[in-house]
Length: 70
Image 1 (cartoon, rainbow, N blue to C red):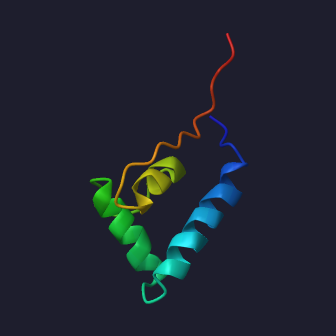
Image 2: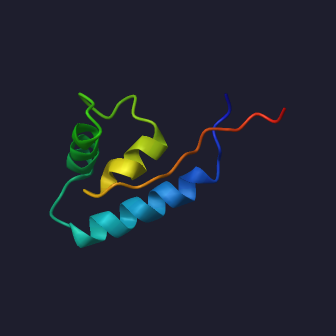
């Protein structure tokens, strides 16, 4: 499955917005907190849409999975 390259700018923009509002956090803290919200042990294998959906404490709905054409 190929990853949708358009997700990169969206992920970076959302991360930048969040980090600028929380400048005392370190990047690893943001990733760790987000993984924890997603119910994961760490962020190593976290998908980008899972990261965005859990970056903020309220639910988000991003889905970057490629849809197969029938």
